[in-house]
Length: 150
Length: 89
Image (cartoon, chains in turn brown, red):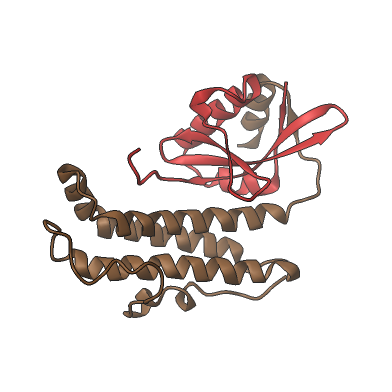
């Protein structure tokens, strides 16, 4: 089993900082964009760059079995995505109502968090290479199996 | 016709889900057994990966790995989780 990775090492926004790196959207806000977008763009960049760094670090652990705390990382990323959704949703709703493109960095950040989590789910799935597992040829067999699970 | 195979990883995630999502997952897998090409399943290959996924509902997808055994093709259900869509096409 590989090393334990901490989300805190990849998402400086959690420590009250904002990461640089990733696409530079420029200093100027688009005409019509709300002023608070300036702050949220920085947070979005931190989420996007953090996702990329976390995925690279987790992939580097694969030869030794992947990060030891994959379950925790996946759950943590899910929570972080929900937090980002809540943070960005007023602006996303406004941009959608205005059919404006200035919300692109926020959308990219949410997608980066989601896609990073799914890539970690793939790493977790790769650990289960063996084992037969129950096999179903039709929905009725599956239903009976599920009824037996609970 | 492809079959589906349960995995421990899938079961772990499945058990944590609300009943309504579990039911939606059952319906999605039932459709997969009938016809994997059904448009509502939105069967997609993950970029640069051997894994595929299908849509459960607007906010969840199932992660699949195609396998084969002497009896034919099998989709192994590997995981299930939130997959929100943020971009309007």
